[in-house]
Image 1 (cartoon, helix red, strand yellow):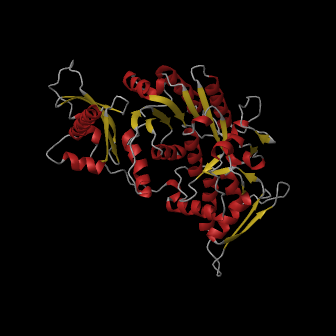
Image 2 (cartoon, one colour):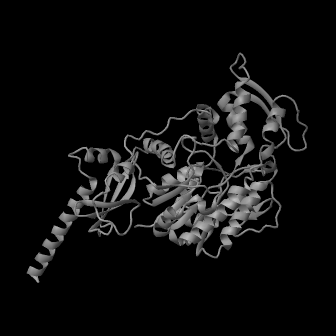
Image 3 (tube, rainbow, N blue to C red):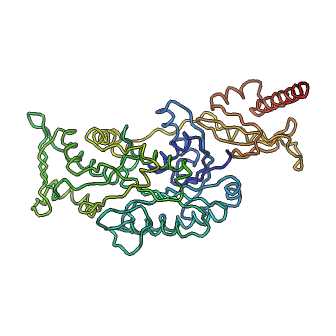
Length: 479
């Protein structure tokens, strides 16, 4: 296997899980991401992968990283990385998106969701990528009643906000692109945190309500009986259904479908079988914070507009349009191809995990420790290129190196005699042998007699050659 998948959105909540799950499934991944003021792209990816390794107790392969920008032509990539993508990548998994609900001065969400997708399609045409896996949203349906089917939507419905409109415009653009031969569309509902740990790196949607409940409760002193009295009237019945799904399940389903070729070319709704209600969320908050006093007065009821109620509704305005209308989504395709992965029900215990993580994370304000990388393998390998080798010298061997864990990555080396002619990123079918080891093993290897890891591969190739010659000799002797 030599083909890579090019992934966008790897630093977002869903993207972090997709990167993990694709690597765990043995997929070769390349990413395009932005550097930030403090970290390079490689350092950002290390900061994402190292916590996964701690949690899983294993070391993961590293993707090939390109610094780019979704909002620039060809994603800001120059000719060299685009040539690499053309030679190595056979599919695109586009999961990057802006979650802004209403258009802002910087042009979001249209800038990322529409223009960014247009740039992704331009890169696909330029590099010959024909297979697109596009992460859309179930809410491209807009304001609609009845069962929403897993098929292409239209632009003639009304929408709650610019996010929905921009995502449908982008999805339609992907479907209509003449350069693509296969388009698979994933439409998740509202994505919450990790069902097992409560982890999130974004505090929109459900987590915003949980944060508000936490702030209200913590600002109320418990009474003599230890119970906080937090009177609040909500103008809903509390029983309106909500399509909320955990991020780990969302990634597991998309990764499974991505790795199931017979499922490709279809549209998939990722929605819960059992929908959550506002009442469940509020009651879970009451048991978590040991509080009481919330009333559901319904749409016809008259709620107070002072104190907590006013603050709550001021902060929750952007989500009000979803409180009256949250449709039911058909999941026939998802059940057919991923029915063995049932969506976990968001119950009280899970909501408590969400709240616990939010509090521990200071609702996104906790300072997280950066990644630790004792040795950047790519920098070491770059120093191995022979300065004496002729530019016209032909390689005798092309060998691969797959270093897992901190500072690792994937490379192939062109070798002639004792000279390493070039070390390039990525593995390919040209590699006659590939050495896979951890970054710790790599450091141990290079510390012994200053030997190159490619010398180990060269010895393996020599031993393999000797075994083949011996096998051929024995076969000839017995013929």
